[in-house]
Length: 337
Image 1 (tube, helix red, strand yellow):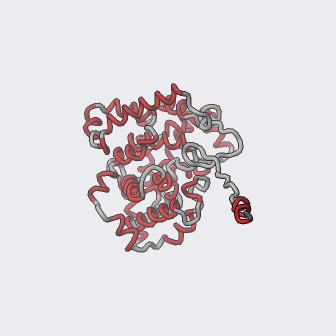
Image 2 (image 1 turned 90 degrees about the horizontal axis):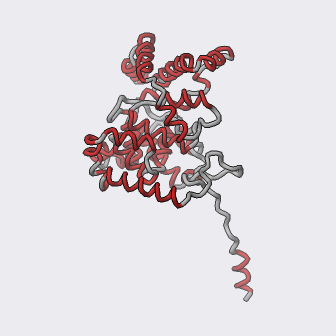
Image 3 (image 1 turned 45 degrees about the horizontal axis):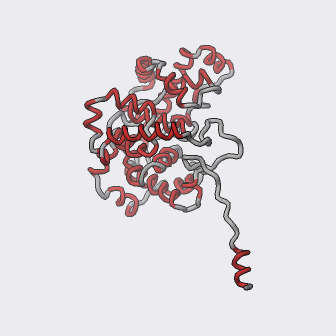
């Protein structure tokens, strides 16, 4: 009887943290983005229909994807802009980035990098891991599965590409990927992104001097001055330049600075349309704070802002002043070696 009472006293209920649908611990205050409210039966049914359309488009394991993209590219583009279903997001990101092909062409490489190679950046990676999405349940446990997976991916990439190695912002990119795919899949998507499997390589985000970040800041500075002249003038009067507020946007590819539900929608478009969403930044700055963080408001209106041609002109202008990015990357590599 005494033993039974002791057991009852020891069985104290554990209070688990409340998390949102993405796995982030909820704050006490009400979420402004409406993610906490339950879905209606109509919304649930609509989402189920959307998922069925996507599954038909992708095929089993992505078997029909390339054929569908060739046949109906405009349908694919429209559906991606509306948002990839969360349950299929990881697979679709791998398909549109080209990382699935890299994985199939390099069996055993990731395991080799993780187990048998050493990295000069290991201590830096360990130091930064606890700072990556600290409010997400997957990464909260010290030395837990999330932190171990993040360490493995970052360490493997720092060995795979010793010219880039490891830079702090990479942790948020790798962390975002790990929430939607396995370690090995996340590693190859990081490779596809930085080395350019289907688009221009983005390793300049992390090379010494951050040359690609500097180019993006130059472009953003001019776009703000041209499209938002009052804001641009205010920034100039207060001596605010884009590096003060936008560097983190670019270094983490929006995975850290923006609300997570918006960051995901940005990544959908970013991976599929092969460009950073300057239109969305301009629209967010123009409309902040009323509807800037609502993707269903932000994205359709942002797509109406046409800056692609001007971005190309600004890139060429920047390269006239600073040299071509490819030449700057080569120069940085030579300086490091």
